[in-house]
Image (cartoon, rainbow, N blue to C red):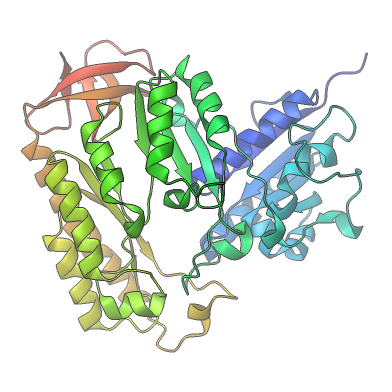
Length: 445
């Protein structure tokens, strides 16, 4: 009997992309392929790409070339957002046999292992095993209505905190963002599916992170148009999961119902992530964001009033086309006075096909670099002050699968990574800790 074919999935990008990789892994395993520990000897290597920036595209190309160089006999399948956006470009890279866009991502198992097993995605339209000339299988992403979902365990520190994707796609049209054109329209996992997956995860893990491309829009495409907070209520009522962490939710979707539920329910992590992008109304208007600073400030002020010790974070972009010194200073000043405890600071990267890429007033690289540095220094001061304010407090924390010299690592309910001195702790355990004066270390209670 011949040996089983082996495969390896290399993921790039956001939590939703990582969750897609988990679904691909589950499908290929169900079809009889064996998962390999790395790409160096795998028969099939799936490269699951991101395309949010030019750097993300470059990273994917470099990885594909490296895979082919180190394992020239491997059949490489490229999928994900970059594959949806530029399939022909990727198909010309050495070693690439197939390019499958997000439009056909549920069919990857049938491409790689046709007729080995019935697909795990029977609701998708029938697929008969062939791909277009040149190994391309890419269609109109706006027609995709299926949601790939499977729990994903990240490498490193988050192997004790699986991600569960319950939403995909986005109906917004921000002028800088390519994602709607490569992810398609917003679509939601039925609540029954989310409950079933959460029950499975609760058998092993104390904390699960709910994720999506535009998570707060969950349910708007389902019968009755349920709201996101009702999904959380069902997950809490119908599963034994001990802690749920909500990932990024757009400002206007942080409703009073959602904030009050987060504040009142001890099984929901006190962690609020609200994308900002800019603290200046004129920049937000050019970005075509659906809120203004007064709306945003209202949401985070409510969050802080309801949850005084919560972590509050945001995504912020610097160097958007036309951003003047005065506009950047307005954004910086808003961030300084707002109750943020961390930021993800991004430098604007033009994406061909978006309105912003052709907009006048492109900001120079040195200016963007300096603005990035200024915000990072600002948030570093705010982060340290937040940690100091929590000295002596007791909080829940989940132990992480990351070795730390002289102890173990854990992530607190309010999103602080801490070291627990002593013997290494078994990962994926929910513990109670008391924060030390610097809040970088904690003691078991």
